[in-house]
Image (cartoon, rainbow, N blue to C red; front, side):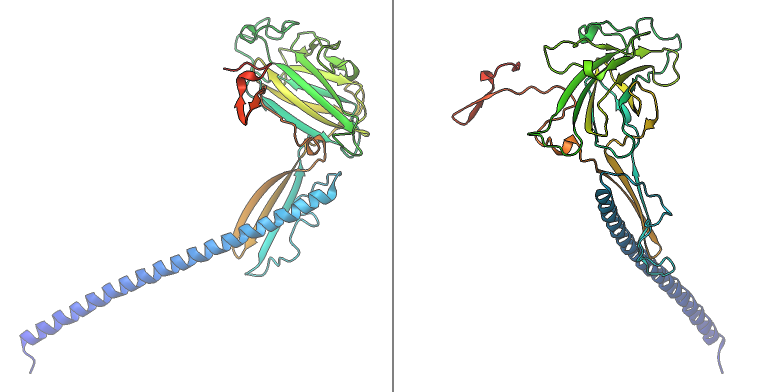
Amino acid sequence: MMTRRNRERGAVALITTIIISILLTIITTGLITVMIAELRQSNDAEQSVRAYYAAQSGVEEGIRKVIAALPGQATQLCGAVGSQNVNLDPASPGAVGWTCQQITYSGSPSGSLPLADKATQVDVGSISGPAFQSVKLEWDLTPKPSGGFPASFFNAPATFPAAGSWNSAAALEVAIIDYPAAAFDAATAAISLRNVVAIPRTGGGGTISYASLKQAAGTSNGSPAAGTCNAAAASYHCSLIITNMPSSGGRGYTFRLRSRYVGTDYKMTFFTGVNGTGTVVNVPDGTATIDITAKAGDAFRRVVYKIPYQKGAASGLDYVIYSEGDICKNFAIFNGVIDPTKGSGCPYP
């Protein structure tokens, strides 16, 4: 016959067993949850990597399309024919491939030269479609001060003073290279290099003929060109139209823009007419954007890639230095040792 003490011992043992079982169950459940989470995380990481490489394959396919389309530019948006990998079955749980391939081309060039003597190169190359015969340069997006612009802000001097005394909107220096569109050969092509510096002027002329641009140091027509500026304009305050350009149907173009004295924003708009009139020509600035979204299982990855696509002057001028400022290097070598003091024409600090 079970005594009271034995019953108490049995109850304690039972309760202890139940508590230990509950603890073991909690620990086991926690371990299983952690293992499942780690397995899921590992699987997600693997799928993410697979999706990334699938997106890279879409980039490679996009590059092939861009190169094959030269010199034309064919924008491809998501949903269009060819924008999805034909080898991908979206209904398949383990499907791997790119689900969207979008290829776009930049429009008429615009951007910012935030500091003085900053420069940018726009390699238009030889475009397909309507030919342009004039270009409108716009610059200066300076926010209007509360008290309005100073009277002299858009009336720069006709000659260039020292940088420290300049208190007007930026002057915009433009160098233009034009060359035969059919084939560029740096050694034999009939290359033309012209320069102009556009200064801000209220009521300025606002136009200059391409033929009158400065061609070389010491030649005539080397004076700055007066842009026309409007202090009340809602967007760009100043503009200059370069007229009567050789048709881009037979010539390729590269533009180099540099801010003088202060920084500025800029925009270039090209026209079929010779005087900044006619139809606006959407001139790509030499960049194609390939935007890929890829899928692996339930993971998606996106890759955006930019590629220069115009076969313009930049591809032929491999040994030309394009700088954001002025470069001056002049030195001599004696017995294998550089002696910069023997150079001439460049100050040596």
